[in-house]
Image 1: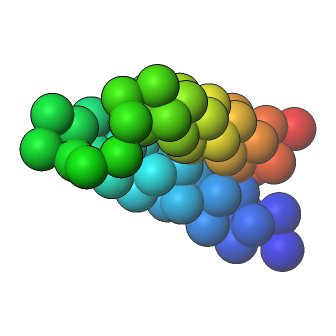
Image 2: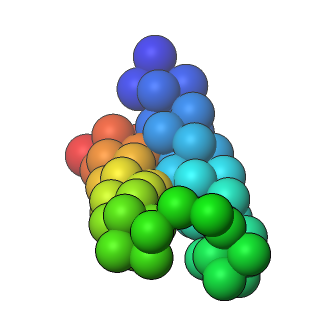
Image 3: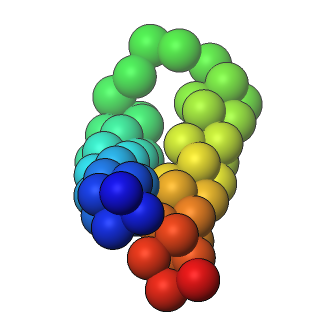
Length: 61
């Protein structure tokens, strides 16, 4: 069960980082204020990093 949760968390984290990078690359085209876009990208990347670390710890611990 730990392997399934760990692999799922790692996949979610990697997907979140990819989506965050795409959003960051297109940020200049967004109509939202820049500060809100930056906050959204930062928290999205933090969530992705947390999910990857959680997945690794769940598998190997």
